[in-house]
Length: 386
Image 1 (cartoon, rainbow, N blue to C red):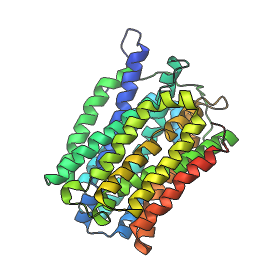
Image 2 (image 1 turned 90 degrees about the horizontal axis):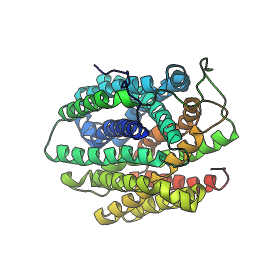
Image 3 (image 1 turned 135 degrees about the vertical axis):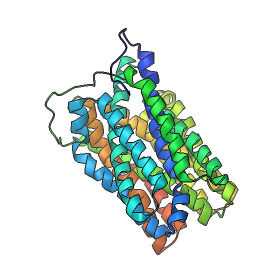
């Protein structure tokens, strides 16, 4: 049984950082394991790109169902409780996705996957804000997101191995859930106990101010690009690049590797160039990488393009979340919920839209449209105080 009781002796800030970093890693491992096996599930269910896009709408539906109360729940119950509840639901939904044998079984699991992901996302970022406060003026938010991306790289590599050896998604996901349970059991007692700007009677909804709306707009554009890479990179390499079975997951792996690498250096880079300039450069890199993969869809150029997209998307969300979590107007959980609500609508609505556009035109046209979102990141960042 996982205990919420902290050790009897005072917990060092390093222990808090390791524990919260482990939660980010587990969250990324869970999500990227699903993303790496989407082509397998598509093949098993026998659905087209357009039908797959419709199916993936179930995840944003779960997200939308939980949006009205997630920030309120984190503010009322505390992020350390909610992150454990959310990860537990996330793991259960992942198992369901692996063993579902029909669309009627797959759809509710996708909805629960969206709910669990949203709960965990807000809660774990609230935990990260609390740890960053312990480090005073030293920015560390991007390193947490780097662990999330590192987990995605590990999961993508493992997914490529599983596909190459014809391991069923159900067996694959069971191994992931066992790892997640072990990680939770070790780290739960070392999470941050007190969130920033706690409100004992939080309102269910607080209208975000102009600054939070601007940050949310940047996150929206950036997360559309991320969502496209997570859900459609494998399909793109299979259908457009025409990579062999052992190479279908290489684009996703390339993207996740540079995304993780970029996030581990984002705090240092933002301290020297400024957050605004880093975000502007990130948007340009994202657009360049996507257009490279669209205009020259060979294996080598597509991998290079996806590497650039990984670097481009690496710094935007951590910098936006770090700023939002320091809001003086509301609790960290409520502020993060406001910004991530706007941002993750892009993250979760983007992939289904790609499927619908691809069904009407082609995947290359869809990815070209997503490249435009990278340019929007740079444009919006020029007008918003970061």
